[in-house]
Image (tube, rainbow, N blue to C red; front, top):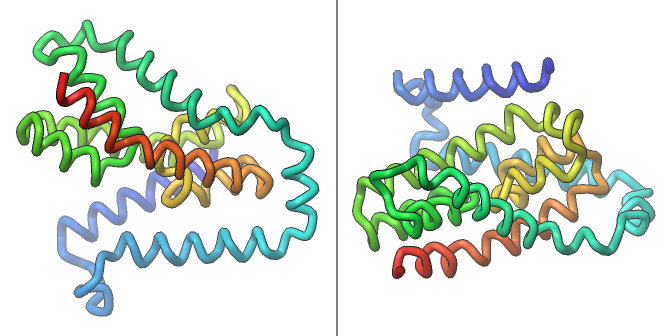
Length: 200
């Protein structure tokens, strides 16, 4: 609970600093989020490197965990199919195009804008950002009520970068490799699925 509140307050502070142009000068010529992300990933790497038992922990995991990326993709798209009839102003393929961004908002929103226009591109941007932020805030609750695979599936393409630190913290270091594999596979599928659904 406390970590979720801290994450929420951190995001709110970031929004505040961005709106009121309070970004430090040394970050002015760079993307602050990328600098911080690199620092977080470095810290994750340190914790993995310091965990001498991580290889043994990974060996104890089921080999069936390799299907997690495909479960992430299939159930994300099934969720879109369930909800899409409620979005009457958009076709089902357009909804599937947005859903197949899997939280990779920077790529999916650009592709959808190119194929379907800025309106749907903004929807893709916001929905995929919300998916990422949801995992950052709700990861402890997802682990508690749905198990340690839940944040990985919910994180989609972000589990190899921005949500990896919170997944490692809430699920354990042994799940970091699983999260990275999930992120890489899902990330790879995004441009193909988005362009496919945009073309229908």
